[in-house]
Image (cartoon, rainbow, N blue to C red; front, side, top):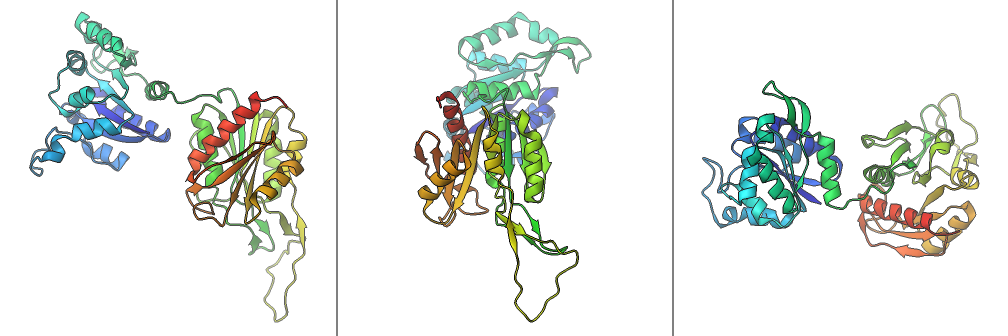
Length: 402
């Protein structure tokens, strides 16, 4: 979803950079519009670096820029049509008055009039300006039009006074955006235990057995669960990914380490999402020294690794357990067999030979096989979208009897 952040000319303008980062953590695409006053407090370059996008500062092009053309003249309409929400933070008394009066003398005020997307404003100003009847009347008019107002907080202000007028916290503003857009917080109060990535099974001090899992699916599940209000424990094998900010991160290497970590956190979990590609076999013996090259064939004896999914399914109680199946053929047959054999509530299966559904890509093509016999094939979509569809199915299963 796309959000435009409008920054107006107040001391709190620097906090808009924090807001941009917070909205990006919520997976919003963010573009920034600045008034001339805002540029007295923070530079457009800061926001361009954060968003990787052009920062809009003028209605018809910046000074010394290329001459205005038809495209620049109607850019506010293009922005108005493509955004899902407009956030003005900080919103000065002057800009609130413009909004309330329907003025359109710069890009941001024109954008407000041109968009049908919901608008959120977070005022910030001197306490006396905030309490002035004119400001309060303007705020009341905006509320009556459906604008979401995130009231300023009380505290020490830049002017040296104390009282209401300080910009609301970045968390409060971001929360208002998600609420206005109807984004869900349907996993609040729950703890989701997510496993991700491969395991590495040592053969000697130099060599090990592993697989091609990148961990992207498990990390997408962890991030989606966080966004939907869950407490998340992420148990991960070695991957080249940064864990989402806010998870309890447990790095592991081998299948036995992953098993111990899962069992250590099982009691607190309400949902277990086993997206890790745990090795099915490991060397029966680990050599203390590097195995030297010889001229004869080398035979390796392998033994099964612990079946973590089956073990936790046997002790799941009221928990929902989700398994993942990476297949290379007979997808439905193998997924249904795994669902029954492991005792899971849901198996998410994909054919890794399909383009866009294999290893180390950002998309996936999966079918959801549920305990009640339901099969739900999904088209190719991002792994983050897949993660949310899996979480939707978890909620459906929780509501279903049996």
